[in-house]
Length: 93
Image (cartoon, rainbow, N blue to C red; front, side, top):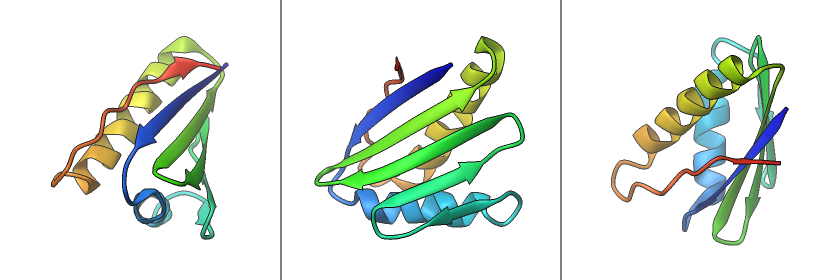
């Protein structure tokens, strides 16, 4: 199953980089200027920095894992974006 969150922000590339670097200390994660990938044990998060939008695609095997990982990714993004917290709304893909 896959869900997508399109997060409006003035700095999508910066937040994508912060997420990948943060998680990359413990799990496989990589990024370039436009895309990122975080390989959780039970899920995969693919990121894309577009003009004014950070697109996050989360893939997981079941609903329980999906719900947990949505919260983990969103909570970390909101921690990095504390000055101007964006709205993170996950939708089924």
